Every structure is written in C-alpha cells, then in structure tokens.
Length: 302
Image (tube, rainbow, N blue to C red; front, side, top):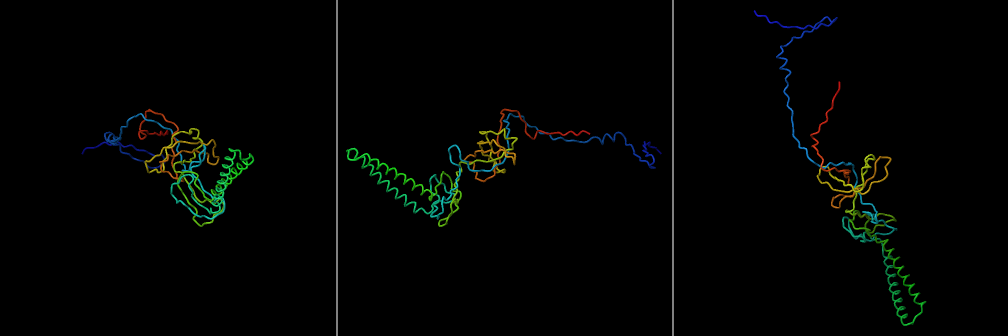
C-alpha cells in the first residue's frame, strides 16, 4: 500500500482551544488559478484639426425688439385715449397690416364732422388768400387785407390739423408694419380710457432676452454670434447676434441681462422659451480628438 505525504499547517489560537487546518495544494494548481483571461476593447480615433469654441450657455424668452435708435418698438399695444363705443374693427387677428392702417374705430362721427368743417374753412381761406394776391398785383388791395387773409389761412390750417388729431384719437391705427396678434374688443362694446383694444407684433424684429451668470458676463460682448435652439429634439439651430449686454448685475439672481437678435426666418414667436449658446471665443485649426477618447482616471491611495 503506497503512502502519500501531505503537508499540513496548523494555526493555533492561544487560549481559543481550537485549531484551523489548511491543505496546501500543489504549485501547478495555484498557477492555473492565477491565470485570468482578459479582453480589452480598443477603438481607433483620428486626431483632426477643428475650430474650438468657448461658449456661454443660458436660456431666454423671445420678445419684441424694444424701441431705440430712432425706431419704434417691435410691438405696440393700442389703447383707447378716451371713453367711447367701438364702431368697427376693420381687421382680424393674424392679418398683416401696414403702418397707419386703422385697427379699431371708436365712435368717430363727431370727429369726422369737425374734420369736414375744417377742410371747408381751409378751402375758403386759400381762396381768399389767392384773391388778395391777385389784387396786390394790380395794386387793388391794402397790406392790411393781405395780412388778415394770411392769418385766416394759418388759422384754418391749424384748425384742420387739430380736427385730424381728434379723429386719430378715435381711429386707432397701427404705428408699425406687422401682424395683428390680438384684438380685445368687438363692435358695440363700450371702452374706458386706457383700455387696450389690440396688439400688433412685427415678427421680423424679435429678440431673446436672457440672463447670464455674473461670473461669465465679462466674456459676452455685443456682436458675438449665438446659437438659438427652440426644440432640443430638433436639429434646427438659428443663428443670432448679441445686441446688448447690461452693465448692471441683478442682485437677486446674480445675473446680467443680455439681448440676442433673432433672424426673421427663425420661426420664433413672442413668449417662446429658447436655449441660447453665445460663442465667446473661437480658435481655428487646433488639434483635437473625439470626446469619447478622453478618460479620467481616479487613483485611490490606501
């Protein structure tokens, strides 16, 4: 009968009254256990020359362009200057109108009568002035008569201008080219002074009002390009330009107001929420690798 010699290590715990035994396996078995099959997935990416951009990301609201530079605002709210009755609304919502088009007519019968009266008075004054000029050529009138005719003509012109101003107060016209966004009244309705009767918006003059963190505001300047994204799920990106950067910081939000001009064909609407990417710096022809190729390793020291 063959005998196999096996080595036994006995670990004794003092005072424990017991011992643990461990059988030592042959060396070739240990080496087999230490061999672990590993597979590392490797992908190849190209280094390319690209244009690197630094940007400031924020969000803003689409609004009509404010007045400035001698131009009216990009929107207007028409209000009744005095109490009256709405006689007619010649336009409808969504209709394109030109500056000067009547949007809402209040009761204008008295104003029209005054304008007509002033026009007749002006015609008569012009005829009298022409007659005095003819008499002056033949020395058949006096200088006093000519001066009186001139004064009557000036007074008639002023009276007509005043009557037309009164008519403008009851014939509310659009001050700009645009689209009728809202009509708040209907014929027969009585309105009080300062009642908003209609709203006009020029869709070609829209801006995005955004707020940039104060720490990033120094890098934003007028004239910088901006990307406008209305829908994250869409690839449509409109190109805008920074128009205005406020010199003040809002103490409550620690942000600075920034306005970005929106292109007329961007399809944006007032009140819409838009993501804004302001390009603050560009560096062309720089070597770069895909973002997926960059890994950050964290070392743990024990």
